[in-house]
Amino acid sequence: MTLSQSDIEAWQKIVPHFKRYNYSEDKMLDYIHNLTELTIPNRKELTALPESFGLLQNLQYLCLDRCKLLTELPESIGQLKNLQRLYIEQCPNLTTLPESIGQLKNLQLLEIYFCKNFTALPNSIGELQNLENLSVSGAKKMITLPETIGQLKNLTCLCLTGQGNAITTLPDEIGNLQKLETLIVEFCNKLTHLPNTIGQLKNLQSLRLSNCVKLTTLPETIGQLENLKYLDLRFCKKFKTLPENFGEKLHNLTELNFHCCTNLQSIPESIGNLHNLQFLNLYSCEKLKTLPKNINKLTQLKYLTILHCSNLTTVIESVQNLNQLKDFGFSGCSNLSEEEKTQLKTLFKKQIDNSLFEAVLG
Image (cartoon, rainbow, N blue to C red; front, side, top):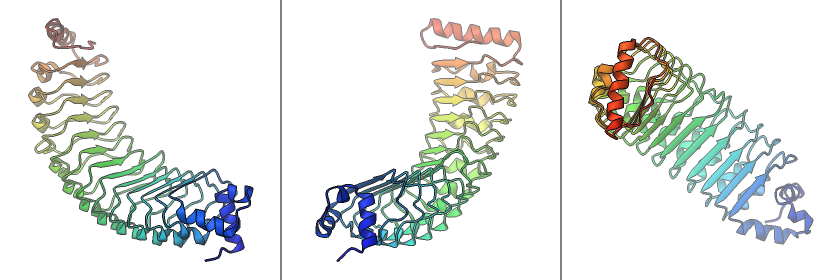
């Protein structure tokens, strides 16, 4: 194969030493054929990748970083049969990926960072049967995921995050991701709910939803995630409550974080079924008036924070039997009576004296 003049000029921008050391066409082709890793950093003058990009038959790693004039990738990228990892970072004029991306049968990782005009993943994304990690961060114009996302049978981590992410919903097909272990949907300012199919993710261990400021509740099926260990709802400022059956099957949950859920109004009694819960953060849950008495059943709880819960009226009945606590704080709970504050201080001072607790007292 011979390279066109435009291809030669493009390759000289991608690999500057081609021009610097006056590489012949044959020498360029030999170099391209044998390349296994390629990073294209800060090529401000690069407007397009050459169609001959498909010649990188041995490429396993590709990173496109700060190629600010790059508007699209060539269809020939689908010819990179050995590509395993693809990173695309800060390419602000890139709007989508070519359909041929689905031909990358060995791709295991695809990460797209802060491509602010990126609007959509192609439907062919579902053909990436070996994909394990998919991340799209800071794509302010991407509204949803294609339904074909549910075909990614080996996906273990899905991350949708970044300030101003425009995601409004997730497709029902996300419930088909049977190997998914980590789901991160953060800073999605327009996300209002999760699909009911979320309960089908039997292997999900970590669900991170922080800073989804329009999320008000979770579907009832959340209680079916028997392997869930970590649930993060920090700064979900409109979040009001959990489903009543929340704690029924979440026996492996160890961390539950409501930090600055300022609109949280109640916690269901079923929380007492979270027998392995070790960390519960209710910092600045300003509308929370009571704690469920069943918190007393959380025998493994070690860290409990209820700081600045200004509407809480009683705590003592919910915490007096938590014998494994190592850290407990209740300062800023201005509606607690002086008598209750004294009881709490007495209770935890006694436990500190027994070397069982390190308490932060209000």
